[in-house]
Length: 425
Image (cartoon, rainbow, N blue to C red):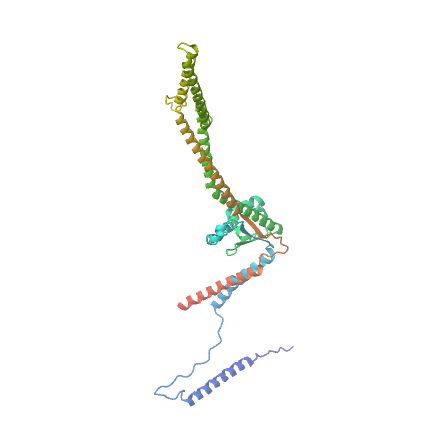
């Protein structure tokens, strides 16, 4: 057998030499052109120009290029790959339930307000109530109330999805942070509309949470209405209580006066006493006439004359006693009749004022109650809690695009910082 040895192919070396030779010819040709134009090796002003530099060699990959490429792979592509696998393989679908409502007031302007435009100048407090409700839906109180009602820790616990799920041992602060992720509140301050989006791993759970939010919001608005009504009627109710106490005191004073004097109505009593005095005056006049007639016809010592004189004396004594009762100041229980009349009139005037104050306070309370009822608030839902059929979350493409933009931005900034530090050295 004969062994054949192949000689190395001389073509690569010959081609390289030919290329170098061709480049040298081109350089010489360009130099000749420069010499013809007067810019070559010929003298110009006593100076000789240097020959042109050879062409630059192709750039080669450096160590820094490999580092930047590795940083891009580990800092951008690897996290994106991990996020893609998690979102499309591990993450569970979530369903959204939507709820929309606004706070309305049964407020109709009174005639005075319509004439003066007071309602437009003063504004409405429903906007303030909506602001309070907006903060309430994101507060820890509603989280606690809904958790007591639905057990959110069990509802949102998903062992196979730790990122979008909830830890069953989460504290109330952790539960509130998770609440901010699954419950989004959108508020338009111009129109006063509130829209709530609730997400959950099951459509029934999302709707249940939305129903609970609506119920708790309704209770909150009812409490605000009750507090506003109490504030609006508290002053009128206080005035009514004072008027009732004043009227009770006046009536008690009159009752005490009647018990002490044993006179129900002094005015009616004095009318009766005046009638008695008038009757006794008439009897006294008749008795004196009879006495005068007897004195003209009978002698002294006549029993009829003695009887007539005794009758006149008795009637006169009774008249004196009755007249004395009107100005008696001997310290008796009844005292002077004029004083009794004065005391009774004073008590009667106090009672009349107390009754008028009571009627006025009662009317003020009725008016305040009607005004508060006219301005009562209620929750009007324009979107009832919906029941989803198709999962909308997590929005995988949006999450990946956002993550990619964030990671690329960090990579670009890091690269620019590296080159900036390198150029300063």
